[in-house]
Image (cartoon, rainbow, N blue to C red; front, side, top):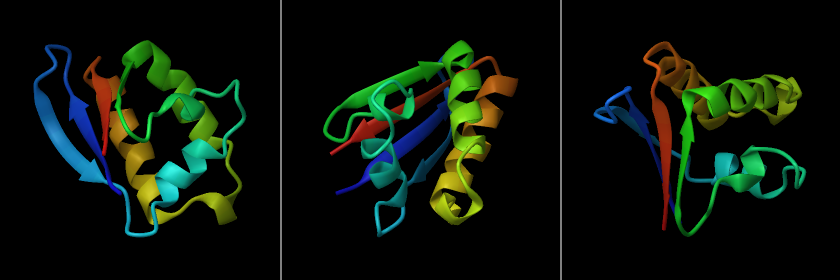
Length: 96
């Protein structure tokens, strides 16, 4: 199962696309996140979109993970979220 993550600008034009790793480390981290976290809202089998306002909280959540929890895939998503914020844009998650 895969998760594609699109970085979109303020007009929702696609800027970049990344994917989860073969181990599904980002998806797994989202599914095991606390129920009140924004990460838990990323749907495995549907579409999820966070705007730049929501992405500030999302970035805080990812930055609060312990270093041993942060995989290269999670680091890429964190970088993508920061790029979307700089563009007043969005992260668009597309699940299988």
